[in-house]
Length: 335
Image 1 (cartoon, rainbow, N blue to C red):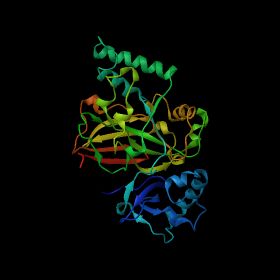
Image 2 (image 1 turned 120 degrees about the horizontal axis):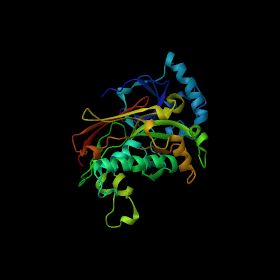
Image 3 (image 1 turned 45 degrees about the vertical axis):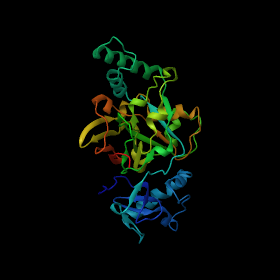
Image 4 (image 1 turned 60 degrees about the horizontal axis):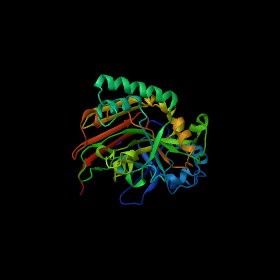
């Protein structure tokens, strides 16, 4: 598998090569070097891992940005590897906390309400359900607040690793999302200051087993995110952490998911009901966000539920976000 050059001055990832231990890597164009090999060139802290670098991100980014400019012109005899020579792991390996924003894309939620009979739209035809859903989402954007739940770190897998379809799974679904990586401790931050707490962005795919979302035995308890979203490999992540300074406005990124080459999702992050800054503000009112924490910001329209087409062994998903790269994950049965 070939990996295209990055378009930003640098990105970070977690890699291994020829059986080596995992290492934090600085990616420049189509090559990567272990961050630990740069210690004699800059005052870097926490070079043992990407999470370690994020613990002092403002300091480290300043030095890495300068180094990237120097190394783009002269590799300085450092042991760079071509990207095709390394194995990719989740860029932050692993986040301590993962937060997911549910129902956060206007078109996506409207489609879910129209397509899923379990939503309370009895007696409505599809046109009436769509009008009802549009009104509901417009009101939510004006007056509502985000809906956030947790996902466990053991569900995270690498950007090119296989997705294991659990035995008995009937409707495993894809949800391509923009992932936000926190760069400093964040508690009760305001919306206008929130983006200053972002270290960078990644591509994620928040897989869901649709048949386990609702609990008919105890409907009063709401949705069962533990059972429906946390199987091993149900959160591929990567391929790189791209620093926020190189991404610009996170509400201007195109998300595209292909299933076996066919485009299923293709939407701008501008369709978010609550933008990245609002999500950080909302989450940080209740919990303290830590460096390396991951926020999954919701998925655009075009999930398997909409097409009545769900994942199965032999499928290949390719999820791309502009400026951030592509996940490519084949689907397999359990061993």
